[in-house]
Length: 186
Image: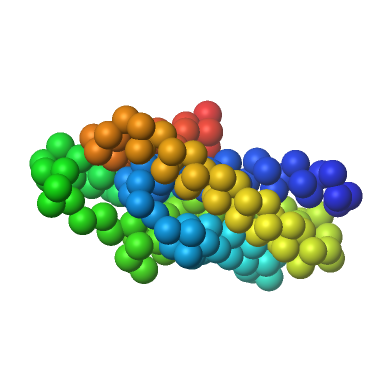
């Protein structure tokens, strides 16, 4: 694949991470630059590694993962989104402790938003493309950029609209889950 095609592909793959990053910024308006880098790096890492994993797995597993990847992403995102909405409704603003920094939370979001990247790796294997590593680096870099941008946007918007905005972040996660599910079911 040529560079322009890989950049377009990388941008498309990073949009789920971008939207989820906005919800992270909404959930925690005081997110530091270091924490934002950790979150964005996790998203970028999985977006970059899963195409390589998919490429190595080849077509043998593709038929199994293709049938359930959208359900896995939907369940993970719906669970996290529902949890955010519940916490936005039930927890008083001054007692709210965000868990967006927890290892489990970041890994769950990273994997949920990167499952499509695994399928991209399968398509690289089907096309017998040997340039998977360069493409993976570009995908990771683009995802890192959009994730940092999303966290910043969420942080700015969340600070202006108050603490109940965490519910909006939860709705975004659920919406992304439905989008992934509907794209694969239709």
